[in-house]
Image 1 (cartoon, rainbow, N blue to C red):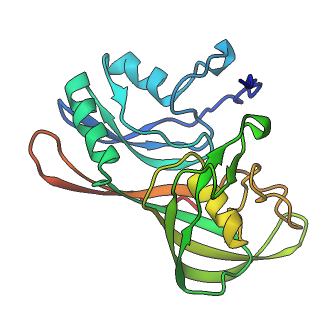
Image 2 (image 1 turned 60 degrees about the vertical axis):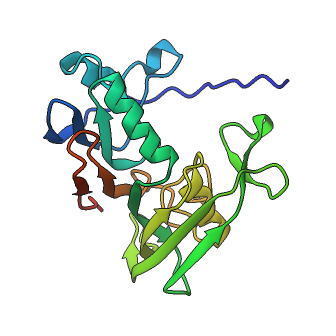
Length: 232
């Protein structure tokens, strides 16, 4: 069995978590980019969404996570029973998640589906890999919002595509590696090619934001449609 070493130390995140909604059962928050969802094993990675929220909301737990660099909507359970109910919705894929992203280059098709299995490989950690033999099924849909050019800090004219991404499965790094597979990595993605093209190296963050989250309230059974506009 291969041993995985995680040497990542998260830089300090000075942005606050925005609480968009709360009741006695759950919270809806806007997670800032550059904040871990859960504290890491390294003591220097203590700061996280969970660590911060549990100070004010003891007993709260995470039913899902967002990557360190991803910002946007998260639903937080305030007790174990609510967490179990939310986790069932995620595992049964009755939760709809929609992300806003900026992709490098101009995507040719206005919409499409990326269907490519994703596998873990300890030799590549923390990267995931596309692998039809050992990977788990993974499917993402994309829709182009606009194609435009942006001038980078060094004066490079950078072609970009703003897209909506809808993952139908929830694999680690799914949207990031699927966009790389499409040939248009997410701008600012240091793991999957989003900082390799001329003019992309100084991008301040991963340009991926969880902009919509649709789920059923575990107690009222009301269908919640949460939206938070992308900051980029």
